[in-house]
Length: 571
Image 1 (tube, rainbow, N blue to C red):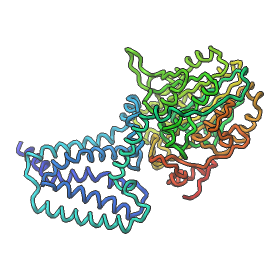
Image 2 (cartoon, rainbow, N blue to C red):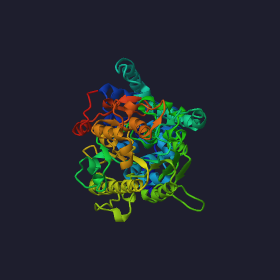
Image 3 (cartoon, rainbow, N blue to C red):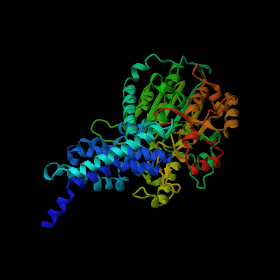
Image 4 (cartoon, rainbow, N blue to C red):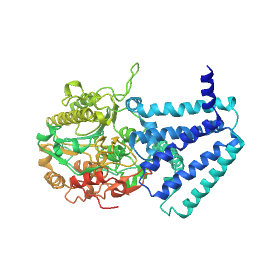
């Protein structure tokens, strides 16, 4: 008992609490000094200035435990930042990360948390005890000794002065505290997330008067059916269509009338940005105009099409919902009904086929069907029925590099399942007495511990090749090709050219449907003879369009882009 009391007194001593508190507050700065490829002077500023201020604050009233709890928001952000570095390997908490907290459904969150256990274990082993000891020390221990507090303040003041001098005179114009100094940059990102959330909440009002001024040009008596399929987390390198060594696309590889674009890149690795760009004329170059625009479904409605939006994901009050609900009919097939409980992990994408069949049975003259699938979203083995588990084993319980073979098996099975889904949709369209077309692409790709960086998942503030290279497929029915031979020739001619899906999907699909609107730019449609590839841009965390070569930092990624026939110029 005496030994326990002695250990407790030592652990709850103000000096111990001070050291532990300073460690948990400064941990993100120390980690980011290792993970971020910045000049050495940046590293000095990013450690000296905030750590000195933390140390000075913890000597306030000589009660470091009390100050620690006053600074709890910083402690929380520190823990959040550590978990994200554990997950992605780099970068501060981005605006998109805060927005993802609002748009991620419980099913996705649960699947992800299951695989963050080591990082969370560290949080509970270090952060929680530090907070508890801080609380206990407020009343049960003496304050910091005067000499300790005085020396600490002097050292902290000296460190802060040196940090400020370096900030002012040595970092140069490129250094901006709002972007480069933790935790200033995190609070800036919180501010931006709040502003975007407010702007999103006002979308119905700010877009009320928008119109495409769209009108049809195809014959009114010609029956037409168009299907736009938005995939999830599918990366092009895993498709046999593009040369993958496994047969992940047995149906589509033999599909007549299919055009596969092998140099398609997305402009965002996050769902809540990439899907709205696919569903509208907005791209990275003018993304902030999204608050006043409507989507592709409205363009089809104005041109006289009956429109249907079907999603295998849960609604989350994002632009995906807003654009989808512009349709004449819309349905989230996994949305809970009275007396039921559902998450986006329940069921499979094939559940979308029944409502598609119902729509096709009506045989409307002009139809648009937009599908938003759950595709290859983690956990991969839950995205397909066991009967579709072609590559085995696929039952890894933990997302770690040691389990990569099993994870890749599961991921490849999701691609085979997507192959089956798209083929079944094409079969249905081929059976219609109509001119029809289908376009499939994915919002973004995925990292699966592919190299020494051990990157996993997607949505990192710094994108990788595997997150950006996505599939783009266009299928035309025989009747459509007969009526529009120029479109088929253009698709064939452009299939090996670079494509920015976030730019060209809207223009291509509107053009295929024969819709005329001032928003349509034929040079951005891969189905037009005048197509010209858009500049390779990436929509960064602050909604700024950045040249892709500035965002791709890694030599591994640059090599992969070059091997895929898309070499990037030096930044």
